[in-house]
Amino acid sequence: MGFALKALEFMALSFAFVVGAIVVCVLVFYVIDRTQTADAIRRNYPVIGRFRRLFSELGEFFRQYFFAMDREELPFNRAQRDWVGRASSGKGNTIAFGSTRNTAVPGTPIFANAAFPPLDDQSAMTEPLLIGPTARVPYVAPSIFNISGMSFGAISKPAVQALSRGAKEAGVWLNTGEGGLSPFHLEGGCDVVFQIGTAKYGVRNEDGGISDEKLRAAAAHDTVRMFEVKLSQGAKPGKGGILPGAKVTAEIAAIRGIREGESSISPNRHPEAANFDELLNMIADIREVTGKPVGIKTCVGSEAAMRELFLNIAARRDDAPDFITLDGGEGGTGAAPMPLMDLVGMSVREALPMVANLREEYDLKDRVRLIASGKLVNPGDVAWALAAGADFVTSARGFMFALGCIQALKCNKNTCPTGITTHDPRFQKGLVPAQKYKRVARYAKEIIHEVEVIAHSVGVGEPRQIRRRHVRIMQDGGRSRPMNEILPGYNDVAKS
Image (cartoon, rainbow, N blue to C red; front, side, top):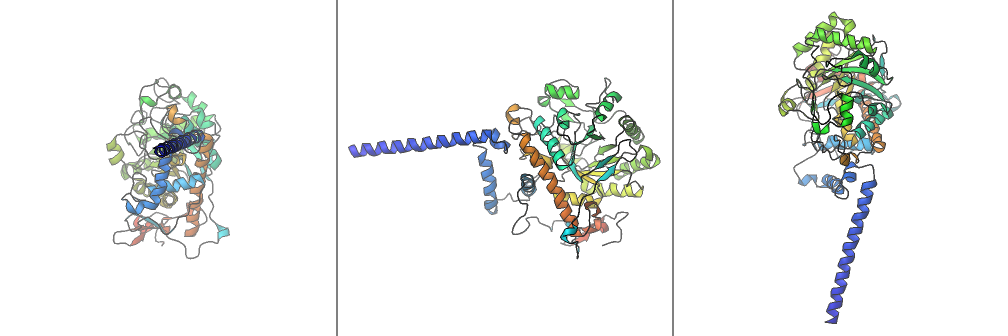
């Protein structure tokens, strides 16, 4: 009996020791996770958040047993997100064994490597490009890849701070989105593009129109390089911006000039621009007041509409937009009706070559720059856009992934677990700008570097020299054709 009691006591003590050790370990991990600044999920969800990374890493080894493969998830698959993750963390971006991409899928772009590419010491380099030659203060843009519009309101204060500092570090511009210019856009010292949405946040007068005084005040900031008049965006063409009331804090309300706690719904278009002639008047007025380049952002609905725009520009070259940002129907946003998100707006893959051809047809290549946007987050996407006719590429969701976005699809609910699209302090504390800006900068630099690698491979000295003849598009039946045969360009015909 005595022996049995001692055995039970030993077992009880052992159990207590194991439980105590587990509790101590959990507490240690809790403290570590709460105090570390690199991983927003672990910071917001101590200990439990570790399982996400564990499962993600195990997925690499167990993927052959599950249906969700690298290239199947939407809107961005695991391979796309993993590339951004590796690039932004500074880890090696090489892969092993072979591509997981099915290159036989019709529409897949394949870059045509040169038979005798330049030697390594002749690698391709990105050159700056002038925007707004007729503006009093033109902008010499240093980077082919930049940060697309994400307003303070749609994303959080620490997210804007990290983007601003990261943009400065990488030498890229940061678009404010339609929510106006906040102090957090300026504090990093990066180049800023001030977007003027249909609600005119930040430059709005009492009647809802544009205040010249507020325009001048915005343009007075040296780092505000350009102004972008937003006509529409790919995720919701024909619908204005939607900021749910739960995300309208006192600070955001003050910057936008709206009421705290009330949903902010922008008009579906600019009332003062009912046609292209009036749009050009609006562009000319803003450029005259600010002295800086002015462009437009639009999602393309038809070739006829874009041809009408270029006809008007050709007749009024002095009033031309300095740039046109083309957002594809596949573009994203924080909140939009599903029918518009799914079914309205031309894809940038179709719209960009078409608009680039119209620009060439009307001899406006050196006057009007083209900026491509809409789900372009990896080097191949950017290189394709340059080949199709873009001068620059911008991305929003790519930089969200760099900040730590896990594609939780909660952008419209103020419950983003990584602190990017929420104004709840509980979640925001997971995003530490002093750490995350480095990821933003590394992602931008790695995109540019790898696009230069592609340019070098196809045999050109600068990414903007990539042409449609350097890209082959996979067709039905497993054969590819040169892009310039499928979508002829004015300066890229009859070459292969």
